[in-house]
Image 1: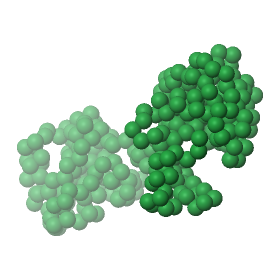
Image 2: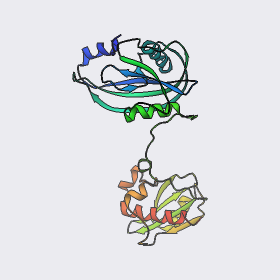
Image 3: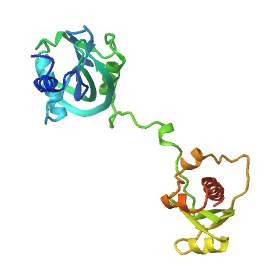
Image 4: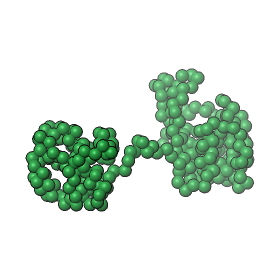
Length: 270
C-alpha cells in the first residue's frame, strides 16, 4: 500500500503544499520474552516502531492495531495510551508540509509471524529491549514510554515559567490599602485566591464598602519596602489584576500596585 493515505492525497490536490495537521499513532509492540517489534523504514532506513496516520473517523487504538497488521502481519492487543507528543512541522522533499500529533500505545503481540507486509519497510524484526538499534530521539522516547510500566500517559505540560507562581491564598480575607490624591484604593483577597478591587474617598468608607461583602481579618496600609517586589509583572502573576472600570476611576496603576503590595504583605501575616 502507499505510505500516503488516500484522504491525504485528496487533500493535497485541494491545498497543495500548505501545512496539514495530522493525527498519527505509534504501536510499541512487545512479547513475553522481553522483545519489541521494530520495522526498518523503506524511505530512510531508520528502525522505528510501527507508525501510521489515523484515518478520518477512526479510533486511534484501532488505527494502531490496523497499522501493525498491515505493516508486519501481526495481531496485537492495544493495552494503554503511553504518551502524547507533537512533532515540529516537517517539509518533505516534494514540498509538502505537515505537523503530527502522535499517540503512542503500549501493545502486546497476540498472534502472527512478523514479516514485511507492505512497501513501507524493508525489514521487520524482534529486538531485545536491552539491545535496540540506533534510532532518533523522538522514536527512542516513544519506545521508552511504551515499555515503561506507568499507569498514566506521558505528555508535555506547561512549564513552571508559563504557569507562574501559585496565587496567594490567605487563611482569612485580607485587605491591602493605599492613599492618594483621589482617595483610597483597596485590594481584598480571600482564601480562595480571588482578588477584588475597591475605591473610596476615605479609608473608613473603603472599609465599610468592603465589609458589605466580606469581613477582612487584617487591613494593611501600604508602606514602602525596598525588599518587596512590587513590579507589575510579579503582582499580576499573583492574579491581582485591575477591573475594566479602574482605568476611568481617577486612580493610577501605580496606586493599584501599591495596594496589591499591601495585600501581599497582609496575606503573609494571617
